[in-house]
Image 1 (spheres, rainbow, N blue to C red):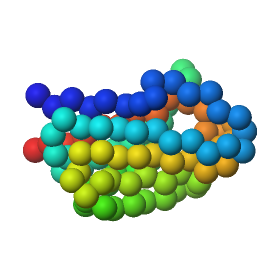
Image 2: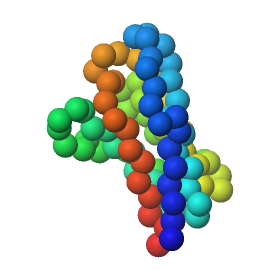
Image 3: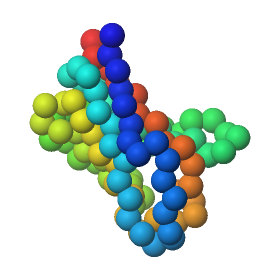
Image 4: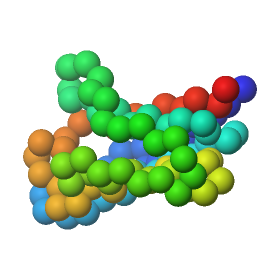
Length: 94
């Protein structure tokens, strides 16, 4: 069975600072999804990565998938209060 692990588990960031969340898979990923959940609300889809080395950006949030497709980083640049919430990664191993 596939396991996805995110780190750090929690993060407190000052407004205007950058931050990175890491998602590591025990198996090769054929698609990796990043989601955000604001407290008390549903999941918001952020982006999907499918190719090794792929990088996508959306409103100060950048995510990439490494060449071996077993790790992804989500970077937030100059964080704002609107970035607060819980971030999840999900993967397809086919």
